[in-house]
Image 1 (cartoon, rainbow, N blue to C red):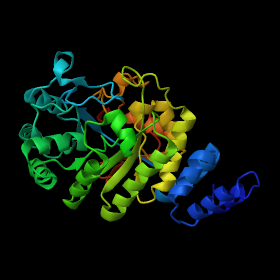
Image 2: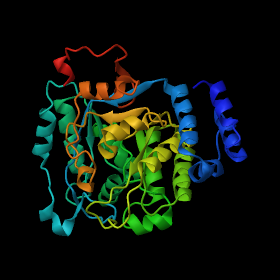
Image 3: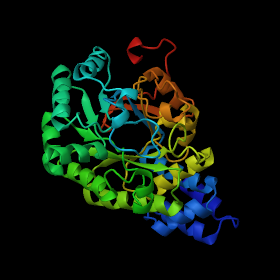
Length: 389
């Protein structure tokens, strides 16, 4: 829809005056307030928020939809923390129930991609007391020695906070050491919900909101980009979501260091919050739409397809999303263990390209920092290049 068509659509009397004011702000490239965001969550129809979010998405990116060729290394699911929402980790006291990869096993995973055009390895896992800062610096150096071109994105703020405290180093000292070893950017995990009351209930024993934000701010100051996440659909309310996004927007105003925001849907299988129903697909799309409208200084909004499932990730592309992550190659268990539709999360590049084209968007392969590697605007050939697989 054009700007004029959207204005005409929102002029209809069934839309409340206060919602039309929000729409005018968006169409005039004005920042919406926290009260506006809360209004969108509480009062706006999905079509209303979705139309605005899609307008912003197309203003920023047209129909371009990004993905990358990546794989995950999950060193361990053994963890010293006991987050109630987590279906993935096993407490250190019960580590015989989990896995602990050796250094060589992780290097062998990387070697398994020799000759394949992957551009990123994503390293996250549980917080294991024996896998300390020196261990991971050594791992990163070994990966870089073997494959210098591979971008290493690794370690949530939760993992980093524990590593640095255990090593008796400041955030800056620890991040400088990891960067010198070859770490290039940070994922966004561990943010959960910043509200202190909710955080205390669901994950009270790990790094707090200030610590998470401080680590990312420090990384940005050192020239390292990062992502940001929010876990939604559990015991939080809309005000908590808006507060979380406000803290992210404020930091992004200050550093410009975040690449993308990734709303993460709470999954209720096999964890201590299994009594809480999961959010509906309507609620999921609302979350994406409001995030796209509110986070005006975040260049990208990602739907993590292994979490949502392929069809829902396609749907999200009409609600502000312009990135659906990467090929993954069945190398992550975090959401499959929590009950995601994608129990074996892997897609070839050709499958990702087709998935995006099916909903009339333009696939664009990117690297970790959103530099374009290949634009797939042309029709997919019936003969698929074997290098795409």
